Image 1 (cartoon, rainbow, N blue to C red):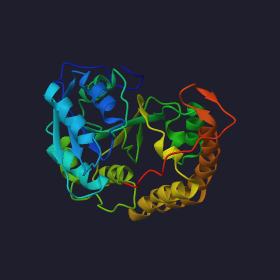
Image 2: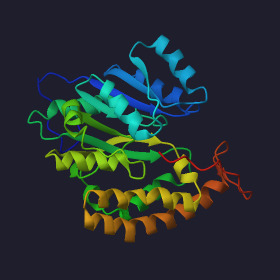
Image 3: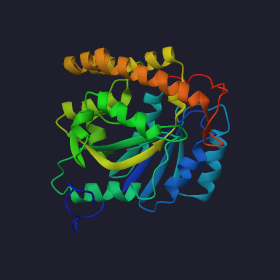
Length: 298
């Protein structure tokens, strides 16, 4: 058990559902689900097909035939917020985790989540999230440390195993099922905000508490990091807009005036490194490679 987390008790262990929204994820969905089905602590895996036009649905359907814990549902309304809601509504576990289709969970990820909430006999925590570390990019750890330093919430969680934060991280987050029922009608359905940050703020505004567990780390795709600078700025503008939506004036100003500009500089430097990095050889090259088209907005 990580430092700062109460020791486990004889309390009943909660069941865990994992929701995976998916739109055109044929390159990553198989590995994502493979890592989930390898963890028996997970009761069910709900994959939400959000109008995929590639082989994502076929891959998931094939895996569902092999693993009965995988359930596939469809959401015809395009957008992450709609797919997310469809999956969270369909989940039956006491705890509902939500990750992205390109998230790579570690082998003890589910056990860590269940241990955390089992030990929380006082039900002090409504939701939980952890970190995400990019895979397949050069100097990933160094860029992550810079990002934490400039983040307005970063210093609060730098040296503590468990701490309270106002937001959640969508690639690696968990809610109690009754908490989702409470905030279900409060969450915004706008597609120009960060829906995970919005969910976290809705939790706190309804009287709940969000925990950040430093040891709960997953791998996340570098695709967003490979987008052009202007597309990246457009995407990151969602963050201060989300805080403004919740009238968190100080956080909106801090992210707009400090965090987003600083992170844009980091992104531009990282983009140069990524273009010169050969993923297959793990070495830098003198010939910049052509990056894929910009990641679609959620």
